[in-house]
Image (cartoon, rainbow, N blue to C red; front, top):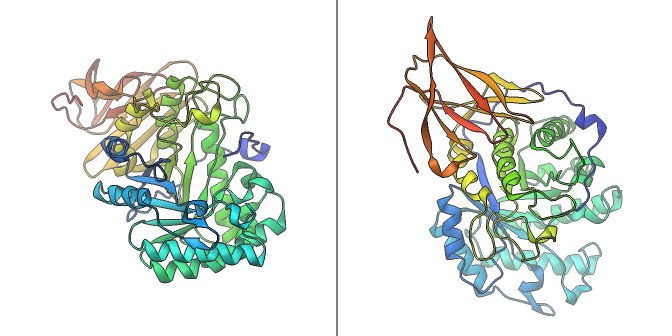
Length: 433
């Protein structure tokens, strides 16, 4: 994961015009989380139960090459891998497993030379042959472009590696999907995926993975709203480059909650979680998003890498955990309706439907604002909503009442930086979670 992010000027100046194509109806949007649990002896059961309890549907972790190759040219599957993968299956979590990182037995080098690549492919063949049906997605390497996002030879070597690894995975685990890319922000800006597309890897894989971090992008560029403009532009670009719609998976997205440069308060990150997941649903081609990550990787409050988690190391939740739990059913199960939705520089009103159930998700980027919310149903009584600033309260009856005329009902809502999920259905009993 990169520490410095640069967003191109053209991406940031992209208009907020909505695309009319929603996510494919046959695809359920993946609400995912990176876990860092697969390589530890400690039981993952409690942490994965918290994942399931939050309505998260997918996890992502690493089957490290350095763990599998425990001695030179000697391969194994360690017990924690099987425990982790069996537990995710028991909890009906979709699993993405990365085949990544170097090993001391091959010079701690990327598999670019024939000798190192041969060893890596043996590892890929062995792991996928030993674990068929245990993971739903295999990903080939992680952030390959990080050391040289402008380097055509680095891109070409990765494309070659993908083309040689895919047949092994298809043979050993034919039901699993295969992702490649894990394109970093620098790779997005400097054409890494473009070169992969030119090399023809889309003919071999099931989707492109992208890591669009903006937490260090600078003032005004590091918000969920700026993020969405950039990602929307990038998705459009790669689809035009490919000449078709590419399934795109945002396999890492996050803001850290450390003190210091590029850091945010846990409360700010909580509001960003809700805004980012809802905005992701407005972007066609996105099949899912994995937040990075589940548990803080350390105790140092000033260390960025220690503070990306939804949970502290003792598994106590940060505010973002309860926010994600509140929004996940709507992100996962509802369909975005661009027609009545409003995306502006400071006010967002996004309409979502699930059969006969209808909600509008509203927030303000900046100062609080009073805005009118409109519903076509014959609403009456008090307006009901979930306020992600207080997610554990669940759906509440507000003091605001609907006013109806000529088949249309309206109510005024105070929008803040925490999205409100406003029910557009007939009144029912107040629900508390």
